[in-house]
Length: 166
Image 1 (cartoon, one colour):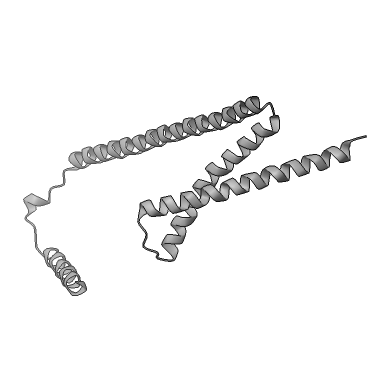
Image 2 (cartoon, rainbow, N blue to C red):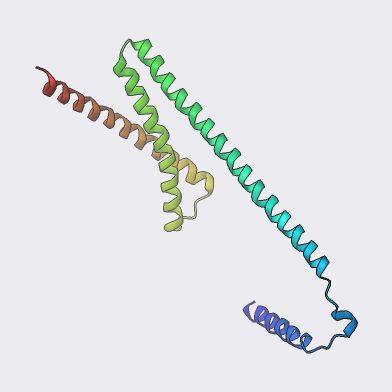
């Protein structure tokens, strides 16, 4: 395949070199500057339309992602408030918020990490398997991390209460 591509490339270069030696008639050598200027104007307009569409599309996607992030955040906070009201404990609501946030971030980090592991170590797993394995491992890791973080925050706040008590 490399020899075929190399042969075609050399043949193409030879043909372009030979065509440069051909002499044109004086009638064919008349430049048409107005048409070239028109083509330049059309090319500039096309490039401006492409850049504008790219900017508008990226703004729409960014706005959609911000709305989605806001809705997820509102759902996590409202679930924490409802758990806190149901159990009549502010600590239970905060623990729920930390655990759910840990799970969500753990899933995302787990999927990215397992995708990179699959790429670097050539495990040859399908995309669905990578998402499921990475998501499950991230879910478990995020849940454990969220609960450990909650315990650390509670220990730190207890320590601060004892130091600040008069």
